[in-house]
Length: 451
Image 1 (spheres, rainbow, N blue to C red):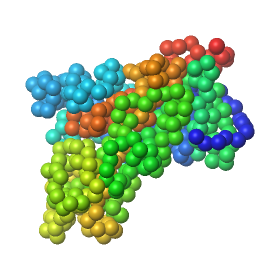
Image 2: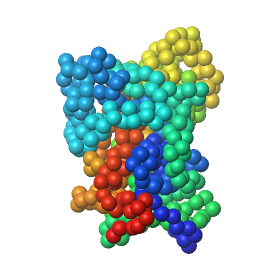
Image 3: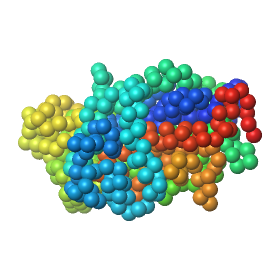
Image 4: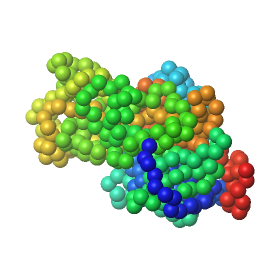
């Protein structure tokens, strides 16, 4: 934990929100909807966070996935029934061997329809509801406007909405320490880029800062990965400090702290934090994948059907290599990838820049890419943080990739594509809705602070 200097400023709010990605911005907008004064603390220079790397989110029984549009999914718990909330709930919990709390999944999945409508009411536009691989057609892809990135456009619109609603945000400012009194949170100490220490007095604090994906020491320490080459994909702002901050305040970690959204081969040197490229699409195609012993270790088309499974297969090798031929490259340049790569690598659309980008690769070595960490702070179905005894730490919440307990050992992309993005927004809203239930949380808006 960082050493702090002398206090230079004190501000007051009904709720202090740490992080201005999908979780924090959703919490801020929900707070404004409910008449609460929120203060947002964000280490980057504006709204966005790691959520800008998302393309879509799970949506169940929303207008795009209800009625005649509700899919029937062969891989479901009940393959002959519509793939709605109950069917998806049982399917995902079975996939995760019932390690997650069913109450947490019920709260999340049950709110999806409302959240899709709520997002559209706050200016978010969805382009379509599609499938990833052989999964159900429930992935709600965002409209990207004139931007290159759907997630970037989403957060540009979402951040503008938070500003329109009058949210106070302190950017280039780090959350450093939770302030606890008698076992309850009463605020936060933060530090800006100049070293000024700010005290936020607030009866509620919600944490959503994106997990620990960029802290390799943390990741190797808590996950099962063997591969010596790993590559975080997305914003370089996720170091786990806020997970550690919660731990210092008495928070327990959920089972599966080391759960990671592994996604399989990334060509070292040609694919870095930004992955929506032709080089990425080429690297995950079903060619020949070998480990350090020159052995195949999975069926290479696994990525097309379940990238999380492919990522774990790569994780379990010491080193990995992806080999393809000039014939493969010419086919991709003319016809596009052999298998669909999210929304940007489409069969029939040539991978025109793949060859140029792959010239920067270090060779046929590939690392194991991952989008985010998924393990973290233990929360209940209201996203309240729990201590080691399973008791609620009053008025302290966590969501998005800072919160754990949503998965077993892997991301459920095959059954709930975009579930982590959907969880980010849902968890931010769930926290504020629960906080509103208590009179202490509206104390500052009423001009007083209740005990």
